[in-house]
Length: 74
Image (cartoon, rainbow, N blue to C red; front, side):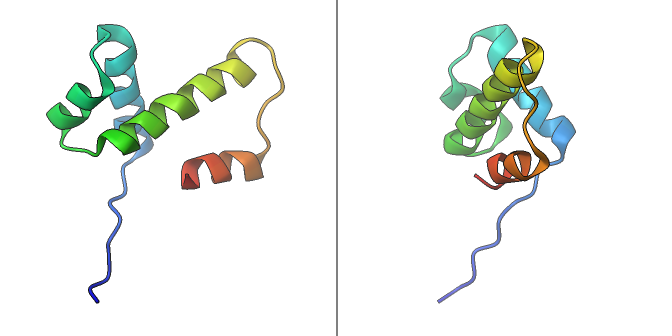
């Protein structure tokens, strides 16, 4: 059985991809195809961005470091 290698994306690329979805209103699947990434991956990044805004953007509690690591892992 062949080993599966996971692609790693730097935080700037992730943030840019999420920003494209938010600012253009294009579907996640279309943006993901344009960028050559999995729509599931981009969907997860968008969800993490929304959670981050919910907890950090509105004066809510910040995520603990372990929680941020868990979100990044997912």
